[in-house]
Length: 131
Ligand code: T46
Image (cartoon, rainbow, N blue to C red):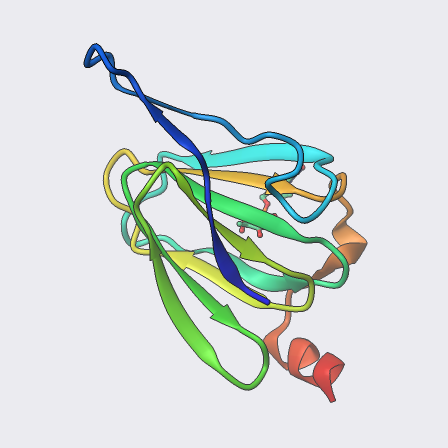
């Protein structure tokens, strides 16, 4: 299921800011790749596809953006704006990322290497895959 994962935050007792750490058991899959989106214009949309097998977690390392998630029946918009909160997206979910704030950075921590054949980039094909 799509859900938020709280990432432990270590606040410095001497006021030196925060440190968050993702250790290997926090995410429900083995991490194979990390990439990040940045300098995204506020009127641009990223994503617009589903994955056949890939699982991933998204984190707003800086700034904020919205993630539209769609399982073929229900569509929900979730806002990411905290560096210690990850959004877990399992396989088979359509996603669109939009409304990027200035300076937003989206970190993606994912379960496989890049494989174009794992993408469903047509929404009707996605709906067909669900029936
Ligand atoms: C996702 C959202 C959140 C690579 O060569 N290697 C990679 O690891 C990735 C992720 C992409 N690419 C190439 C493929 C395209 O030529 O980079 C180009 C842009 O990829 P795409 O249009 O898929 O980018 P987004 O931001 O729409 O989607 C990406 C991920 O692909 C996707 O899995 O969930 O970020």
